[in-house]
Image 1 (cartoon, rainbow, N blue to C red):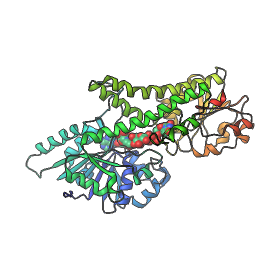
Image 2 (image 1 turned 45 degrees about the vertical axis):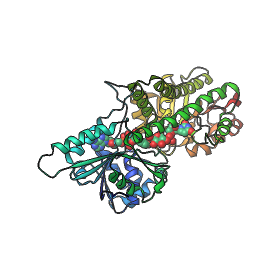
Image 3 (image 1 turned 90 degrees about the vertical axis):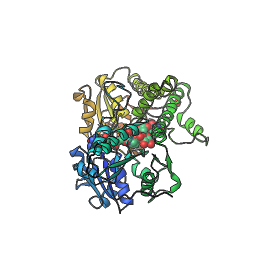
Image 4 (image 1 turned 60 degrees about the vertical axis):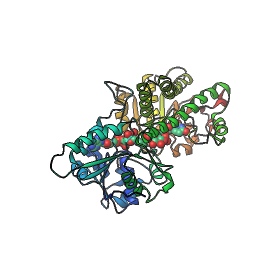
Length: 468
Ligand code: NAD
Ligand code: UGA
């Protein structure tokens, strides 16, 4: 095997959902490495350094235990970006890459301004040889842009000690809510790059806890594209099953039975076949839009249209569930109280980015409903920020920490996140205090229809054709 470049000091730019947990796991598995996670958002850094581990900026099962072991041992969170870059042998770029809101490619292309600014910071402050690792999800060929910026620093550096760079792509496949498990037991690690020595350096880090046969070297562009394609395939599965859920409701079939039947075919597999209120999260939509933009850019209109349909079905699913709720409540939500159980885009996270719960709630508020929100991890402040984003809905909603109080006097309860505790609700207790005729809308298919109906509440479940 070719030599690897010696790596002792690591810097990660971006202390977000990826940077924080990923570096925590690396620090835990590689006590010989010094890891500094930097972010320009001082508030976020302060939360990472908070004495109270329940106040970490990110909720992930298992995260706080690792932070407890590693923080201020070989894992530092700081806003001192330049010195961390200067000391690092390897730098991960783990910054946000949202969709551009204006200008060329608005609404589809990735906004690379944070990647570019981090790269310029690296170009200006790095010293010696630095391996720069793309951790963020990026459009194919972004490594070329990063190399161009870094190469110009190599050339412009004048007489002082020469600085050199090599660039790797190492996309992250963790899912929120299971980030620590995904990081500890990854299906594969992709390392795209040109310098074998640099690839080996990163490989040596992962080898501390990942089997070598799961660490796959590729070329840079394959690595970048594989990340976008993997997310597109996963999202497409959800849109596929959601499209079939509508057909189940129309025909009397049951989506749970259909997805079990489909998933038993080993070529299809059983995972990611749960019908629901549409996929949320910060990445699926943006990554598919980015893929669509790239396809159009390369003149592949048919391919672009194919993938765009995944997003079209996703927002259609959210709208059709909202319309179903309005119809069942006699076409009128004015003076009706509706309880929203779950605000996070999935269970076991406090993240609400692109959450179907937020988009469906906005539609309901627009109909004149009064909403009461409950979520075990999302705070009232966060909900307020999400709802105020575009239209001020503040007067028609409230927040309740106790599920029973949240459901008191409600005309309808809508389960929008599959939190475990919602599976164990005492419906007898809830039913007594609801306003009749009362409804439960189970957009995640996690409740037991008979238990709810037995207590006099009407039930609607996504893809549940038995209700016809
Ligand atoms: P995030 O918004 O939670 O965190 C990004 C952080 O980068 C922010 O705190 C921001 O302040 C910081 N930042 C931006 N520019 C900076 C700069 N120049 N210097 C210092 N700090 C800077 O984002 P995230 O969810 O962690 O996602 C990061 C990337 O990883 C994205 O490209 C995303 O697509 C990808 N990804 C995310 C997930 C996920 O589950 N969230 C999973 C896989 C991949
Ligand atoms: C997803 C991918 O699963 C990760 O591999 C990827 O790294 C990440 O995006 C990313 O690039 O950001 P994440 O969005 O965190 O992870 O969570 P998922 O478990 O994929 O769920 C996404 C959405 O799909 C959620 O709203 C979830 O409720 C929904 N979903 C998922 C369904 O509706 N049905 C399913 O069967 C599975």
